[in-house]
Length: 138
Image (cartoon, rainbow, N blue to C red; front, side):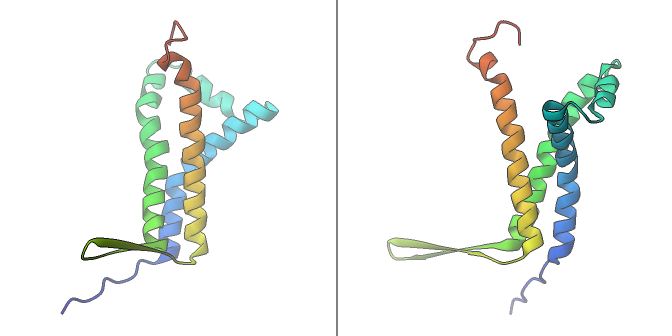
């Protein structure tokens, strides 16, 4: 007899997801404040990045912290709110996706997806001319 796995506390998972997504949320918010309103403490980050070795460190850790944190938050919280069932019988295969109404987890999923779209979209838009060979110095 197999015992069912204990349910993961959804609030704890949502909090962990929010903590994992927080660096990306802060970074994107500061970047938008600076780009749209010309305000925000982004100048301190630029001064820090100007120091020797800091830009290379940021370039190595940035994707891990920002994208990795968002992906981890997404996977953790999607695992709490969704359940996928696959059934095969004969030559047919059916799938059922169930989404549970756990609002805080759904908020973290939406936040993670939105920030991932924003960051990846920005990276593609910024680098597309280089990838297409339209820009000489990349």
